[in-house]
Amino acid sequence: MSRQTIKNNGAQLKEMSIIYQQMGAGIMKLRSIIVACSFLAVLPNAASADEPITFTSWGGSYQDAMRHIFWEPISKKLGIPFKEDTGASLGIAGIRTQVQSGAVLWDVVDLSIPDCATGAAEGLFEPLDYAVINTEGIDPRFVTPSWVAGPWSTGAYLAWRKGLFAENPPKTYADFWDVKKYPGRRALYDAPQETLEVAEMADGIPTDKLYPIDIPKALEKLREIKSDITVWYTGGQQQIDLVRNGEIDILYGWQVRMDPLYKEGVIDRSLDQSILVPQCLVVPKGAKHKKLAMKFIASMLSPEVQRTIPESFTAVPINQKVFSDNMLTPEVIQTLPRMKDAAGYALKNAEYWSTPGILSKAQEQWDAFKQE
Image 1 (cartoon, one colour):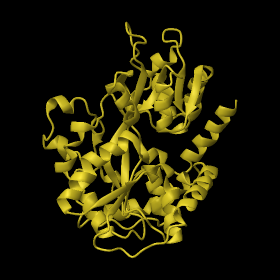
Image 2 (spheres, helix red, strand yellow):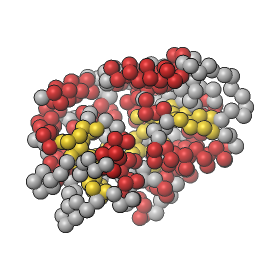
Image 3 (tube, helix red, strand yellow):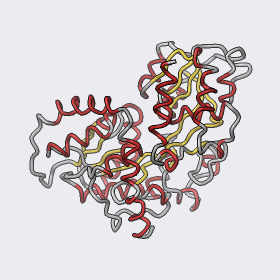
């Protein structure tokens, strides 16, 4: 990756922030209030040599995997203690409050790309040291001055309670729309991103032809099934609870939440038309251990560490060198979509969703659709 490419990517962040700042302004304010109660009461202390580096992620089985695959072995390798938090679920609001208050508690945070774009445009992150972080094998679209894709991509797929539809299980979102052939209580994500893509696939649009999204047409497809949606969920843990409590029968669910249920025999699934979504890593502005944070991120993205992901977690390595350098067995490779060769999968198009005006337009029409 050239310095000019990184510079050009950085120049796009202000435009990207316009889009993401329009996402749930009221929610962001509420989040800020919540995190303020936690962080403003904490006085910043000078960093000492024996202080642990602090990682922040999403909690649950997702965070368990982060700890097992990345934090524990890298901490041992570098001889640096670590501690962890689950504040990533607060989104960019948690980092914003810490940075603005001067009480920065986190060193490395795992976020969604929309939050990374927003925070970068607001100046909430430290510049990443690409003299330390080797980005060879990382998609250049996701390497910017202050955030980088990683440590993996996660997916989402069609899932249903074990035992249902055993003789002729659903495979595609067209099947999800077929309420007569596949009756049951349904759940979808309460957001235009991902759900509009699901509607497009249900309408027969190939996974590599989803963008640009015809928003009115996708919403019209959703109207066909709207009355059959029992729950419009807003988060990952809610998906798990809906399944475990027997409140829904079939849903579009996030891989990192559904996979543990699948392994327990609670659900069945179809990987056809799965949506692949990359995560991103940042160092908050004013982090106490930013130099160590760069080393940790470098290790997290290294092919040697990335190749271990499929051993204990079903997320997709973000570093494509594990594929090109034959670091994975053929049996493992055929179960994982590649960022540049996602046949049968839909790669969520961050470039499309970062186009000025797209997300705000989609959200406005989504809100109107939900109120119908």
